[in-house]
Length: 517
Image (cartoon, rainbow, N blue to C red):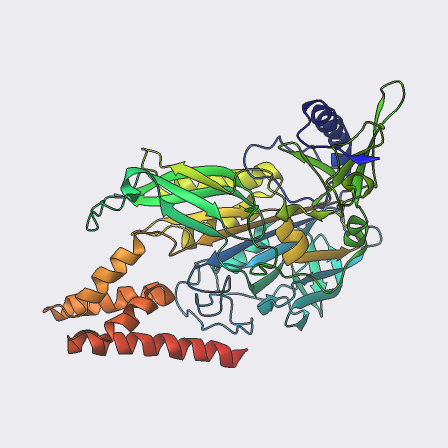
């Protein structure tokens, strides 16, 4: 028996075509796969009595902060009934803050069933949740939630509050302790570093480009520097009264990423039955009989074919054949690789596409509403309700578009849901829809130039301009910290004084967050 060479054109064609046929059958059982946003075919109509779970999550990331949705990144606009650990915003409670939401749909059962909903992530910090759940730092458990199609037990909220709008969702009510809601909501801080790097590409990236040129570049380079694939990577660049847009469908994981890089690894301490079954799949067996017939045997699970690589339940697998053909000559003193079976590696460690790409910015300047509607329509396409898609759109509109520098929005690939943030529901739904979007702020390479200008402005002759510079630098947060530390050596005492104050504010805010934890 020898291991099949993946570059062999004949065998590769056989494997890919056959696996694709199996994939078309396996999709009948693909309820755990995350939705594909964008160009995927419309999902088949669901049964009237189907039981579904819909989850959607927005995360904010900053390359200068080592956690996504860090406690110090934004204030809470959750209702007063939620015992929030973030500072309360107190104003504009119609603004949807980044959170995760779970809604259950379908028939409540006859008699009405009870459900347990567990969401967990090692090293995560669940800051807030509603309705109240049995909580630990890394997990939330809503236990014995009774399902019903109607209820009058919902707690009163401030009219117009963004959470109140979630109650218009045509989902099942979940009742616990005589309180009913149409959703479960959570605010989570995750130990995930920014997984993407944004650079200027083309002529504008040359060393002789003018440093004081404020023109926005026409092309960027985006690179996946994280531990899992990134999908629908979209760059928003402010221009006049709107934004220009550039997009890349997919960025795979860098094949040169160090094996011991744990920057985005949050392996779960426990496994559910489905995950345990997935872990048992080790290889895809390809055999050829005497008559030339080809047989592919997979140890169960869903099959995905990407760029010629075969992945089973998010695991890249070894491909073998027992056709008896002779292998390549062995090197002296080395074992025969054809006699061994390679262990499966995580799909996130196997490159199945580019991990870096150039993004050309479109010439059209688009409004915020038009840009966000594209994400809303993609979620509806995947099977989310109008209310659910509207809520994600509201979170994006409030957090994803900056007026003075480029931001990036991307969708986190399947390994995020299987390895980072796990969702278990008992009884098991017929289908799970899971979408996690990440907004990456302060990744614009032009920010360093802007911060340098603002630091210099701290010593301006006009008090109004000095105050404006201080406020802008405070808004940049940790992104401005290095420049402010350098400013402490300035000969301008006003610059030193204001830099010290800004650094003290950052330090106090960070200490307050650490004490809360």
